[in-house]
Image: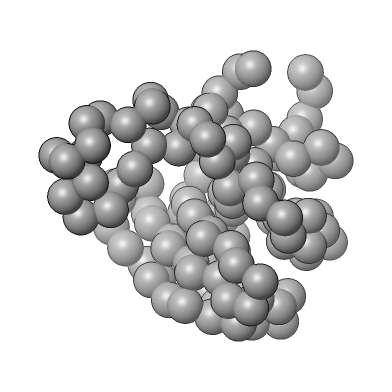
Length: 120
């Protein structure tokens, strides 16, 4: 699997749950543009990312409800990248010191049918 290496104006990581999603949008220099917990529905997501949508890419772990977010992104022309949750290292406070460096970097891939998928 090839890692996703697209360059964008903003990067949105989504921690997706059944009722909520936590968004973190960063600029290319790593500055936080948005850090917010919102309801897990398309309207809330689109409202939250609207100021940063031009040049935005969205990344999400592969969980039970990722396809709803991927569909919303596809409908609005937002590139979507899906990451394998088992390959994402632990990043909580102190977790790296206590548990080591984690399993290694994630290798996200564009979701099938998303604008970011392109040609393989």
